[in-house]
Image (cartoon, rainbow, N blue to C red; front, side):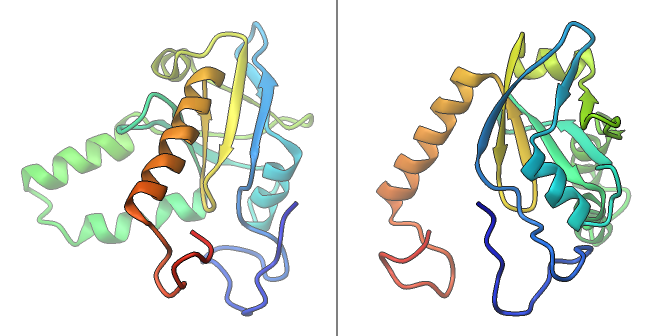
Amino acid sequence: MHARSGSGAHQRGAVPGRMSHFLGTHQNRLDAKGRVSVPAPFRAALRAFGEGNGQIILRPSHTHPCIEAWPLPVFQTLATPLDQLDMFSETHDDLAAALYADAFPVDADKEGRIILLDSLTAHAGLTDSVVFMGLGRTFQIWEPAAAERRRAEARERARARGLTLPGTPRGGAA
C-alpha cells in the first residue's frame, strides 16, 4: 500500500529507504483503559522517522473535531516558523498555546497501542471505535462517522476548487 518516491528526496527526520508517509484510513477499537492499537502501516511509517517504538505527539486539532498525531521530528519543525514571530506578540502567544499547550508525547507499548487521554477523546467525541486517517506526514484520529464526513467534504472541496499539488498538471494527482 505504501509507495516509495523515486526522486531520492527524503523528508526531514526520515530514515532513507523507508516509507515515511501515513496513508489510508484504518478503524480500530478503543478499549476501556483508553488504549488503541496504531495501525501496522502507521507504526512502520513512525519507525521510518527513527522513533523506535513510535513516539508521537498527540494534540487536539484546532480546526477539526479530531486528534492530530505528529511524529516527533515533524512536530519539531513547527518551532522554526513560530520562532520567526515576535516572541511577545499576541500572534505568537496564540499560536504557541494552540500548538503546544495541549500537546502530549506518547509512546506505543509492545503491542503498538497508545493511550488517548480523556481530554483528547472528549475533543474528538470518541467512544468505542476510532478511525486513523493518514495525511502524509501526520495522521488524525476521528470518530468514524465524523471521519467519513470529513473525507467526503475534503474530496468535494478539492473537486469544486480544482485543487492540484504545485507542479502537477490539471487532472494529475491532487
